[in-house]
Image (cartoon, rainbow, N blue to C red; front, side, top):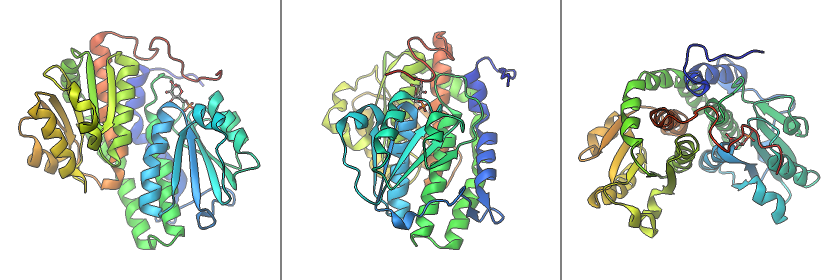
Length: 367
Ligand code: G6P
């Protein structure tokens, strides 16, 4: 049907703001047993019968897969390989027995992702997809297509589709962890109840709009930016850099914090803003020590953390953006919001065409 901007200046702003409600919709669709269990369509997925999952996607959907790798490996002990569709499809990758292939695509029509799926036909034990458009080619050609229920996404830079992809992928990882005996009924119910509180945390973050705008105002003067994160925050750093370059045209790169000393630290000077994504999780101290190496060389740090993280480490940072406290497993979904907001307001400050950035298409259906 017809979709309008609903009072927002851009579709992207509207789609960012819709995240609490569309994530709640997705949870409503997949949760069962008073929110204590996860329901999958048809005959579901038997994660005990799998030795491996290979995940394939492009762009933002690829970063959702990269995040999911951390979840599946840590929560479910299930090895995951992630690849970019345009590489996967031509490499002739072996697909061993007991491997499921999982394709993530907002549109369900991305040419490279569809070709990668077709390559796996007759090879993978099961072809799964996580899609926003249930009638799409990728959905139709999968053995099992899981909808993300984000609703129509118009902005070329993906926002709500990304966080809904993450939500569905996390549900799958939790299902896998439960089936494989890594977590019991109560632990699953506990994680799901934390997930149900996520829309509230996202709403709290949305109320910081003015803070993000002011922060982006200063970021918009930069020619380059670096995003750093570890663990679950590493894929999110990549997504943050992608968002910023796509719509503000500021050159941005992301690195795993631990790689800083292997190259990118050479770029640090007073003109280099460094966005550090660091909730107070198990890797916090390591990320903070990398951040201090940046500050010691004059780099301007925007630290995105939680209240405890700010108390522990905001000394000397250029700006500190404080997210609500949340279970460490859920941080990629919550911290996507400041990454999107920074990119959005930076683009607005620079006067670019936010919803239709130059040279980019919403869906890449040709090679
Ligand atoms: C294009 C869009 C991106 C999207 C990517 C993959 O590059 O601009 O926002 O992440 O395609 O699209 P898909 O529909 O397969 O998720």
